[in-house]
Image (cartoon, rainbow, N blue to C red; front, top):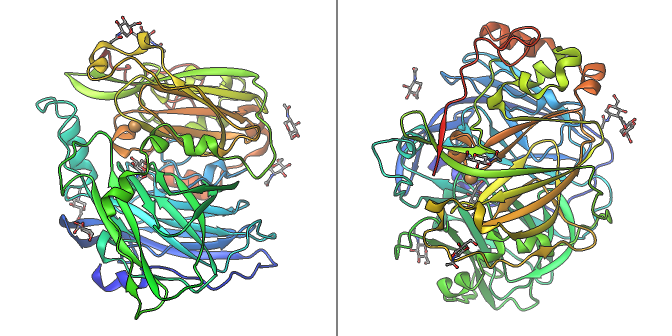
Amino acid sequence: MRAFSFIRAFLLLPFFLLATKAARQVVNWDVGYVYADHIGGSREVIGVNGKLPIPPVHVTEGDTLVLHVHNSLNVSTSIHAHGIFQINTSYMDGAAMVTQCGIPPGKSFTYEYEVNQAGTFWLHGHYHHQNADGLRTPLIVHDRKQHPYKYDGEYVFAFEDWYKESFAERLALTIDPKKSFPPESPAPNALINGVDGNATKPISFKPKRTYRIRLINMSAVVWFKFALPGHQMRVIEADGKYSVPLEVDGVTLGPGQRFSVLVTAHEDITRNYQYLVEIFASFFSRIPGESPKYHTGIVEYNKDASLDVVDTISVLEAIPEDKSFSGYTDVELSALERQPAFPVDRSIDLVLGGAFYMNNVPGDIINNITYAEPHIPTLYSALSLGSLAVDKDLYGIQSNTIVLKHNESIELVVYNPIRIPHPMHLHGHAFQLIEYGPVDPRMVLSENREGFSNQTAPIVRASEYPMERDTVVIPTMQYVKLRFRADNPGVWLFHCHMDIHFGMGMAMTFVEAPDVLQDTMVIPDSMTQMCAEQGIPTTGNAAGNPGTDLSGLPPMPSIVHF
Ligand SMILES: *[C@@H]1O[C@H](CO)[C@@H](O)[C@H](O)[C@H]1NC(C)=O
Ligand SMILES: *[C@@H]1O[C@H](CO)[C@@H](O)[C@H](O)[C@H]1NC(C)=O
Ligand SMILES: *[C@@H]1O[C@H](CO)[C@@H](O)[C@H](O)[C@H]1NC(C)=O
Ligand SMILES: *[C@@H]1O[C@H](CO)[C@@H](O)[C@H](O)[C@H]1NC(C)=O
Ligand SMILES: *[C@@H]1O[C@H](CO)[C@@H](O)[C@H](O)[C@H]1NC(C)=O
Ligand SMILES: *[C@@H]1O[C@H](CO)[C@@H](O)[C@H](O)[C@H]1NC(C)=O
Ligand SMILES: *[C@@H]1O[C@H](CO)[C@@H](O)[C@H](O)[C@H]1NC(C)=O
Ligand SMILES: [Cu+2]
């Protein structure tokens, strides 16, 4: 790990020439176990080509990404491009048992798809949360067309959380019925571009140049704040969508989220500055020196200049957490693309929750259902069930499926009447952020009321041209209204991006326009082959049976609310 950190450190690219011709960008990944050594614990994690961090992948809008994956793990794997819409290629979305069978140990598979969006994305494992064990890296898609904002160089800050236990160990601790719930979790350490938070290299600024700083939250659990004291930051992108510039003192990112900010360097080169990073989560107890954690790095104008040292804690603590937990930064942003709020053809209420099931094991639910994988990838059911594909029950109760009609304009009203904010991520789409508001106190179950006064959160509505994102934090005791057009036939997961919650079942499936899929989509033989090698069926309902016979699927566990 140490040997490679300097390569990844900070990536300063020269001013990006706009490419003219779409290209095939070939990336070879041998996914395997590597040993990583960081403050807070050393352990075996998942890397690529014998290394961690994994080098970021750069492509240009319109390019075809060809990602050859060889699986050197002893379990299956799959790779999801977070935020990439996969128009007409839902089967390349990488969500195991949703759009594909996992790539078996010792085997290879090639992901190949056009990337028709520009912005800041990331690639990560989507088989049993391998994401949280290291299998994650930025995917930067440069503009092919004229860039709406001019800048001279760019830096990437990819934030990760680092634990001494593997994801499986942390999940087991969380759901252990013998332990109190929620468990006392130690706050993780932060990695920035794959190195310990305080070990980052200086970034260099040239006078009066403008830099784009891409911030990516690749963490499994925690939030990040970023500030550059002495400089004005303007947010111009969130989750791969450009915004009208918004001046901010700092930004807060929930898991899975991305922002780009523009910063213009001063003319004066007699001082250097600090950049500041805080890693925190509202649900960790505050322990001085332990949680939250603060990190600093240097913005270098001149290596001989003196450093303008600020009071790290007071600067970072002045950036309201509220801005992220209530998403006001998102809702204050106005999309650069002048698309007014979509009309609503169909409004769907989704209530996030926690429950106990099966011998007091805690789980997470959406509308009272805890997600469990079907016996065949849901996309393959949608393609093979003929006219029965509109019946949500045939995808299995625990895939928690909603079938959408082609081009329907959907509003999701996502309620979070529990004590933890949840970053919800939709595959295949970005959604407009329409409104935040308080949940009805009657929705809050008694155990969750403790420590909360009745909700006083204001109702906050989007600007005329709402910002679109693919990941939104649903603040605690609030709801968020989201809208999107079901114009991307495919099967798309909607799940909490805190990997522990996803692992506990906070996920559901949208089957979008199965009729169109059946007319247009052909699954590559190499994909059905992978299923066959593992004895996984590729036709039929969630149980792998033809028609309506669901025998063989386990019953939905009975749940008790808490
Ligand atoms: C798979 O490999 C990991 C990492 O080396 C090891 O901890 C685990 O025990 C192995 N599992 C099996 C089933 O071999
Ligand atoms: C997707 O497929 C449809 C019809 O099959 C086609 O009209 C459309 O141009 C395709 N879109 C992209 C982005 O490939
Ligand atoms: C990053 O995202 C995770 C969830 O995906 C969230 O729990 C975490 O708080 C976020 N971290 C930062 C620093 O925003
Ligand atoms: C990182 O540096 C900051 C500021 O110098 C310091 O307060 C903090 O304790 C350091 N963090 C770690 C984990 O060493
Ligand atoms: C979930 O279950 C509870 C308790 O049985 C019930 O009151 C509530 O209406 C259900 N919610 C949904 C969205 O079905
Ligand atoms: C959905 O919209 C697309 C593109 O505008 C159009 O080609 C298609 O016919 C529409 N389908 C339906 C069912 O409205
Ligand atoms: C909160 O609201 C509930 C339901 O409206 C009410 O029963 C309760 O007394 C209120 N609690 C406080 C502290 O105001
Ligand atoms: Cu969650």
